[in-house]
Length: 114
Length: 114
Image (cartoon, rainbow over all chains, first blue to last red; front, top):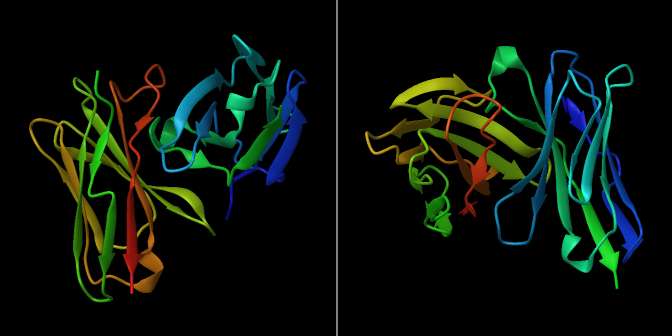
């Protein structure tokens, strides 16, 4: 029962353009959302997070948008750089089940073409 | 500051055996969480330890167990290995158990059960 879904296994974008990665969730108890980036042979690296009391959070080139009514969040990377090529995981947690009990999506492989 | 260190990086075991994986968290981090990553299920939460006590547990059978030592180092044990236990096991540490401190992952231990 996948409670966090990333329906696009892969995405290719030209360098300098915007990358938009999408994530949907089914559990209405989720109140905190995170994005992680993973390079081959390395563990996931935290990118950015957002609380359910917000609908947008920015950190440099990365912006996460949250649409609670649609149970949807997205990660925007502008401008995209070749070094951004990696697998991106969306994750969610609920206060009731613990901040470190993260429910992950299956990932989207982003390829930024120079 | 050194990152999360997991040993060994690779492990091959036979069905029915048991295995112990080790994790050293970032210095000063007291919370350690374990995740299993498989191609079919993605990353799934196993358990979390804080101050030597298991604080949270995912939906895994009792063959999966762990412990945390007074220096915050943690071990994970899987007994009576099954073929389906073949996976990447990721350890993550954080400073606190709240959302202000995101998880920092190690590079994982790749376990293959034959």
